[in-house]
Image (cartoon, rainbow, N blue to C red; front, top):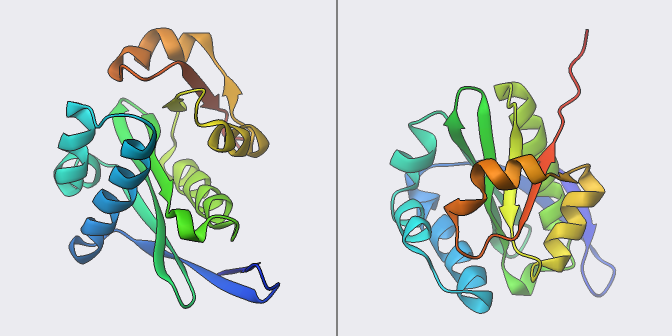
Length: 172
């Protein structure tokens, strides 16, 4: 659990929720909202958003949601298993009316912990320079721009012009 503040400075309680079929529509709606705001939904987006259980969960990935007290589910993010121990941090979005509550940061922290539990290597993301606020959040969390990740995975989306990798600290 965490706390953030709304515009009035009142603390807003944030909580993380695991994927369930009854929350799947939030995964679709939140992501469709931000993607269509800035880009066009590509076929790969549509397939994942329509079938999160078969495309993300069943192959060994994870989907988490963040809820804000009084607002309900406001954000979501996925870890998509991409082979071996590799995972893509993908489909991270927060409803426009919840931005500023630090819900994205709270959700990203939870996802990084989950990626460590899953032994993600590499853990990477694909994005676009137009998503400057998200890229700043990823950089702040420790993601680094990575040309190898771009070469290996970047062709997956037409809109991809940013690829980043996160190095999970392994304890000895």
